[in-house]
Image (cartoon, rainbow, N blue to C red; front, side):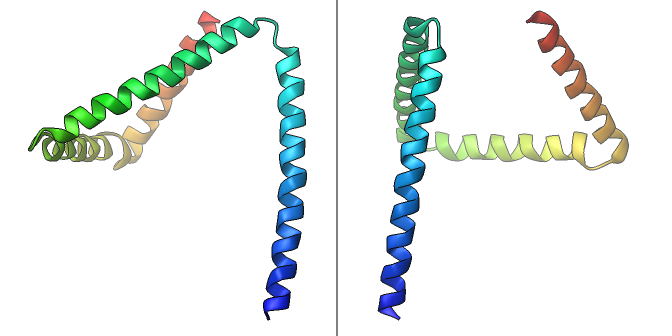
Length: 111
């Protein structure tokens, strides 16, 4: 059984190495096609900074004694309201679908 397991690990590692090589090849091709590399780097750096700042913010909120539990209650309340308002009845599901479609059209028109 251990021999079979080692063969499975060998096969999995070979497939992973090939997939990683293909991944980096595809990534390099896509990077070569990008015209504004500085803009992509700037946006990527901004996204990393935003994630870092948001993690600091969430950590600060978590350190306040009752605030995380209150935020959980607010989230549960909003989730319950959303389910009741949009997902429970067929007519409200149709309304939600039309709202989403109109939002998609507004976004597509601005491009």
